[in-house]
Length: 339
Ligand code: TYM
Image (cartoon, rainbow, N blue to C red; front, side, top):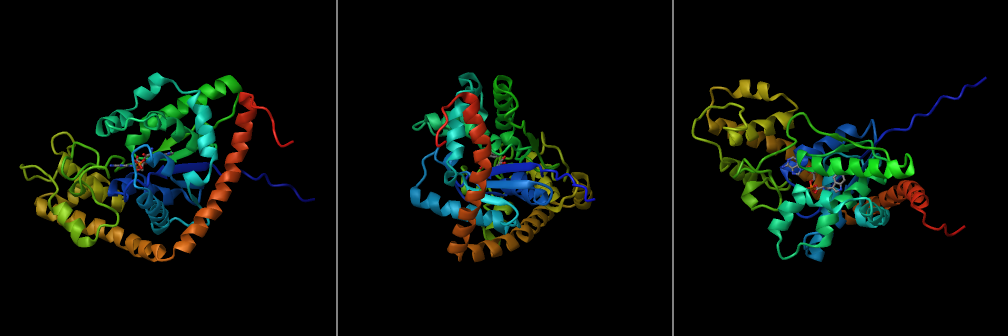
């Protein structure tokens, strides 16, 4: 007699990147390169979070282009679009619907403690809109919509993930076990890549050009930016984030990209000068980005292909989302329809 083998559901991974500019080496090291590591073991959804991007003013034609560009970056980084659900957030209205419901389970006090809100509202004082404030409820919806187990992100998104967990638990306490409470996934090294010019601050695409490496920067630009990276005057290659933030940042970039320990890299370079360190970082970054850039160029030359991937995957994401959403609708007491 045949015995039924229990089918175990693959656990779910969800993450997103904003198409608000071309992605940086920080996005790559903190998030993107980890996405690939998870694609076999998990059911992964990687989203182009365009709805998040409009919390800051965007030029429509540029945003449209960047959404495609980011989808191409996901694929060019090695993610298989047949295995991973790569799609645009705005193509799946369930994100907006769950976000509204979760807004009603999120407190003003919690939202006003978010450091990203504080930073962004200081940067865009003429446009402190409600969307910027309630942004974490949309991020919680992104994650909870798919019963996500694991969220690969950089350290700067930890606070938003903590809030997502709180919202999930609060909802579950009222309505029973509706949402999976997600965990973060952080790389051993590189979950906070720092600015090349102000290494006490996070590398960010909204800062001036020479402070970050754009994933599509040509090799000569990468070389120039790293050459000008701020270090210090003591001349010793040593990892010490407090006293030597610039040098430490460069060491962590190599360690992260080569999946080696900081100790290993420091030992390799000890006794050498900062010129040698910078050459080493430059070679390592160019070597990592060149294949990605070549593939990206090919993909961008075939927009119909990119659109077909996004359409197909938005449909898959919608189907998965509708399971959670119909449960949530019932739990909060919305009247049934279409019966
Ligand atoms: P975003 O678009 O700012 O960044 C995308 C990812 O890159 C990471 N990251 C960094 N990691 C290391 N060093 C840096 N300098 C650096 N800069 C950015 C971020 O931590 C992030 O993982 N709110 C999110 C997008 C989002 C999301 C989600 C993420 C929306 N919904 C659901 C995960 C799950 C954001 O603004 O990321």
